[in-house]
Image 1 (tube, rainbow, N blue to C red):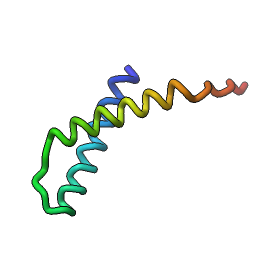
Image 2: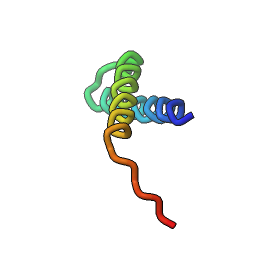
Image 3: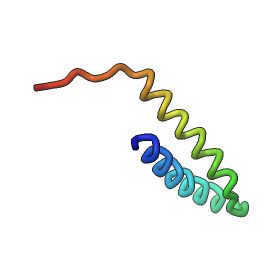
Image 4: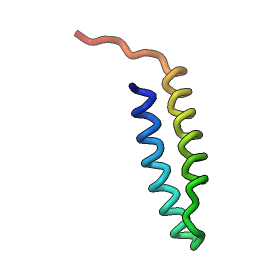
Length: 59
């Protein structure tokens, strides 16, 4: 379930970032840019979560 949530959030954030960047540069909105950014962002989040050590459980 956490992978699905990561992909959904990565897609939403990538879509917003792509919209803002293309609007500022005057280029047309391109969905392929959103898909590429989603893949990169998802892989980055999964990599960071795999590399970071687990936190201690507090009572």
